[in-house]
Length: 596
Image (cartoon, rainbow, N blue to C red; front, side, top):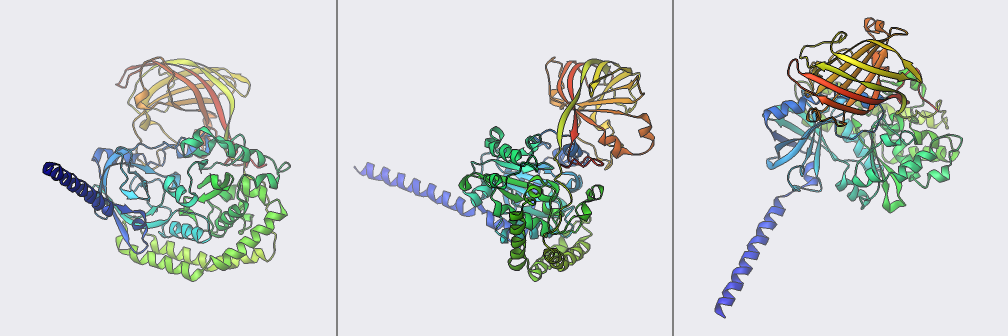
C-alpha cells in the first residue's frame, strides 16, 4: 500500500513538472501583438549558409521572370523563389530551422537588400509565434518614407476594412546589416480567421489580374480549397464580362457592396495607384462563408501609395485625365460606377471617410514618429528618407481639397471602360526537333550551330524557315530585354536556344526554352519548361527599342522531351518539342489598351 502511495506521488510530481515546463514554454512564446508594436524597432537576425544566402539574393535579380508575369499570361503558381533553411532571432528569441526566401515583384526586387519571407513551419512542425505562421519583411525600396505601408493599412483598419498590421525592424543576415524593413502581417490563415472567423472560403491574391471569364484563372489561389474550387470567382467574372449585361442586383450576391465601396474609396483617397481598383494589382479577395460567400477585398503591397500620379504606365492610355477621387480601371469598380446607386453610395462613403478617418494631424504625427526612430538605423542605400517624408506630408496636406473639389461637382465622369486583364490566346503551333551541343561561351547568334527541324504555324499561316541553328547554354548567359540590367545572375538552369529566318519576309525567329536543372535528364518524357518565341525584324536590334522587342514575345506551352543531355562543354543535347504558341492579350498592351 505504501509503495502504491509512493508511486502515485511520483507520478503526480512528474505530471506537475511537465505541466510547469509547458507553462514556462507557453509564457516565453512570442505573441503576434509583440511583433507589431509601433514604439519599438524590432531586431531580426538571420543565420544561414553563406552559399544559400548568395543564391537567395541572386533570385532577387529584377530579371527573374517578373515582367513575363505581367505580359505573358498563364496563371501564376506563386513559386518563383526557392526556400532555404536558416535560423532567425527576433529580439533575441532564437527560432531554428525556418524556411526563408526572397519576395517581391518588379520594383521591389533588390539583390543587395532583398525583401524576405520567413515560414516557421517549412521544415519543422513548430509555431513559435502565437497568431503568426510567417513573417513578411519588406525592404522599403519603393517606400522611401518608410511610412506608406504603415499608414495605408492603419487607415484601412480605421475605416473598418481589415488590413495587415505593420511594424518596423532592423534586419541583419550573416552579420551584414540590411537596414530598416517594414514587418507586414501576412494574409494567410491566422489573419483570415482573426477577421472572418472561418478559413473555408475562396482566397485569392491578385497580381495584374482581375475577375474576367477568360482571365480569372490568372488570379492566384492561396489555399487548397481555392485551388480546387473557383466557383464564386467564376460567377463574379461572368457578371462583370460586359457593360450591357451588367446586373447590379446579381453582383450584390457575390460582393459585399458596402464593404467594397469603402475599400475602393480608401484606395482612391490614399493615391494607391498600384492597388486593385486602378491597376488590378496588390489585393486579396476572400469569399466570406459568414457573409453568404460574398467577396471581401483586402489591401496589399502598399509601398506605392500616397501619390497623385496613377503610376508609370498611366501616360500610355490617357489615365492622367481621369478623376482623382475615383479609380476605375478594374472590372468591378468600372462596372459598378455605371450605376446611379453606386455613384451615390460612393460619394456618401468618401464624405464619411474624410470626416471620420482622414485626420491630417494624426497622419503627419505618425510620419514624423517613424522618421525619428528610424533615422539613426538606416542602411547607406536608404538615403532618401527626408525626401520621401516631405513628399508624403505634401500629399496629406493637399489631398482633402483635391477630393472635395470633385465631390462638389459630383458625379465625376469616368472616360474609359475597364482594362481587360491579361490573358493568353493560342495563335499557333511549333513542332520539331533539335540536336546540338552544350556551349559555355556567351553567344547571341546561333546560326550555324547545331541542327534544328522546326515547323511553325502562326495565325493560321505556315512559316517556312531557313538557316536554323541551336545551342544549349547556362541561363545566366542569356540576354534578357536587351541586357542583364542589374548585372546580377540568376540560378544556373539549362537554356536551349533555337534560331532561324522566315523565308517569306526575312524576319528572325528566336525560341528560348529554359528547363529547371533537376529536370534536365535524358528520359524521353515530357518535362516542364519556360518558353518564349519571338519573330521580329532583324533591324529591331539596331534601333535600341528593347521594350518593343519584348512586347512582341510570345509564350510556349506544351511538351518538351529530352533524348540526350549534358552540361559539360561539347556535350550533346537532343530533344523533341510539340508546343502551342500563345500571345498575351489585354493588360498592358500599349497602343491597344484592351478596353471594353
